[in-house]
Image (cartoon, one colour):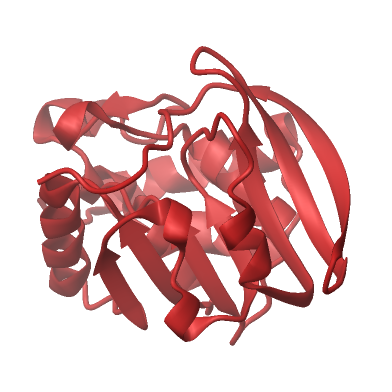
Length: 216
């Protein structure tokens, strides 16, 4: 699959939708969404619908998130170029690619071996290179590389993974969906001191569940 003028045109329509209908105003996010070819991360049978605001099945019974969800999480993260961002749940690599297009230094963890292999190959094919890509347990984060400016969790967690909060630097932010399997609420935690956090709530979403350990 190539990135054709038709794909680029559909991306522009998607970005207009994200700006005008969803209310995304961060130009860094909109530019990244306009740049990253989402159709390359999904199966070719869905290619014609890649730039609609829809989720699609990917490997390991997971999904690629709605573009609006990717844009909203990315905007809440308030990423500045050169910041260290930890992503929990690489998935197919689409959110990773958006963060890289936002000029973040991305460290990413995936527990599903099929998705880890797919995303690693796909990002390399596209000449996109996270600082570190790991097959492992997202709950544990990546303490070796901590602290991080920002942490984004792309799967719903039933409980708050406190280990991740420890890996944020003071002033850093974590965006995470929390709640039971059927519906989560999107939260942003800002670390205001080594032991204090400000918590903000941004409405209900539906994410795949965040699971511990790894799956070969």
